[in-house]
Image (tube, rainbow, N blue to C red; front, side, top):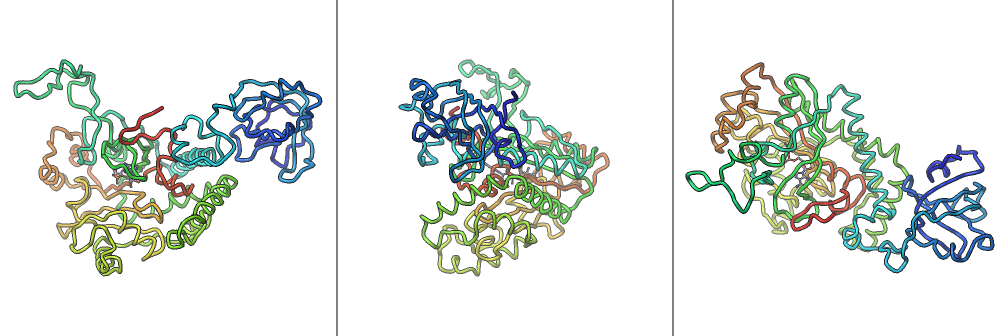
Length: 477
Ligand code: 4AD
């Protein structure tokens, strides 16, 4: 007999009678009702045990967390809450679970506690739903690009360049720290290192993706990215996944259209395909918000928020307009912002981004044409000489979710910008070559995958949407 999944057995069109299933016990009620889950769905299947038919010693081993194998008959359920249930004929314990020490008891656990038990937290409804959605979103992302003629490009993880020019990188070396080779000036001599030069974990695959866009036309990367920024916030990870499309012959307006169309596609994909998990998380969020003061509660449910993003045009606003709005806003005038806005040129903080999205425009916002000196060197300089063709997409509850730009395609301007921030031309000779041989307008963006998963699942801490979060002072598991 073929072993089935809970998801298959609970689906309406299965008409088999004799069934076989394996999974983990969620609860065992009244020595009779096992709630069994195998990860295939948020729902458990009820397995009914006639305790007279089974040994008491065996029944005692049906504890929360135990792995079991059941053979029985799929029948219409007598009780409420499910259409079908399994009348158990045979039951084998595959793996015992000690009820005294098993951390995931059938009760509400705090997310902090579950982070400490991240190896078992996908045994809970919330985390299994989040991780199924994470998987579905990854699939939707590949599907979107594949359906739209993009090639999937694997950017290197070890690099010799700092793509964002921010210097927040983890070093990669095979040198012995207790016997570091030094050069004449007393600095570490990387010519003796594994790669013969200083190397780091990548902060972005963009520069390499640009090289492929300038030959294959439309490409995207989707891979791990590392940042050694010491921001211990609910939105930052030291290791996160980023999706970076890059397209030749596309300007900033095209980049905005692509980002909006792409985000809407992946969100509608999960709305159509992951309904049960979303409904569960929608209810979870609603329950969580009930405990909050009115002012902090969202006026939309999770699913309403996802539909809202899909149904509304992303508002496009220049940085200069945004600064005017913020400067004249109530929280700025009443000094409620932690960082007050008074001058053009200041970088926006998350409180400002969230004000624009949640209070002022009340929809996703694309901010563009930022001051050149707060953005990366590779962004195209506008004719005003002081702004660049950058764009950030801001989402409700999240703030910045996407960062992108039209790239500087003019060799002389790019060289000047690199010189201004001391990036040696030798370090990026290959990047400059793109501007020497068949340069063209091109653009792209980076979507922080975990921030997307946060938005879609309604989870408020980025540590809860990646299997094993890497944050300052924390690399357990
Ligand atoms: O704005 P960022 O730094 O842009 C880039 O890296 C560009 N090279 C992208 C491109 O144009 N191809 O990062 C892009 C996105 C941010 O909007 C955010 O969603 C996410 O990556 N991100 C982080 N997510 C989690 N933890 C961090 N420490 C993050 N830093 C950026």
